[in-house]
Image 1 (tube, rainbow, N blue to C red):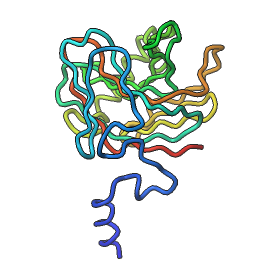
Image 2 (cartoon, rainbow, N blue to C red; image 1 turned 90 degrees about the horizontal axis):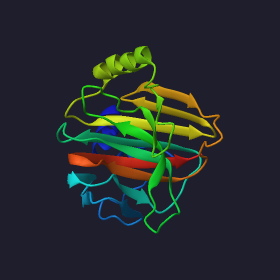
Image 3 (cartoon, one colour; image 1 turned 120 degrees about the vertical axis):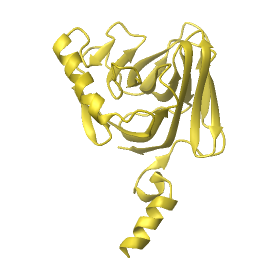
Length: 216
């Protein structure tokens, strides 16, 4: 029986063996998603979603058409190289000043640089910037880098979990908690979309798989 369960786990997508979870990507096309903002590109590649960008003029996002409040989000990600930067927006919003309004909100960072702040919590296009780690606190920032250097897998798949319950936001990287933050600011966001990011710059080549959610 144990061998059978192991074989099933290897054969089935993660969402199929986690009760209550629903895939956000259908494994075929970008139904339920739409690209907004810059000139980065996204492709459906079987079980994976690819974020591709060369000479990207502005941060580009592939956002869900649906919005979410409280949830348990899980996915795997990896970079094909260390050239660029990326992330996943959680409770993302778009500014209403124009049709393709700028995406803003909470972001679960993807950072392949030596800084290694993957699974940190950032406020995209908002004055507050970094929430975890606190960029202004040199000791905290250096400690985050040191810890993440040990848990982040360079060039391999990394598992990320984001748990949002009310104002409480928690993030895990490869099973280790990186963020435990309660946002009491007036501008705290209670509902929004998910969005994959291709960051502006020379190049970004990133992949995601097994993107699934349990609404709470």
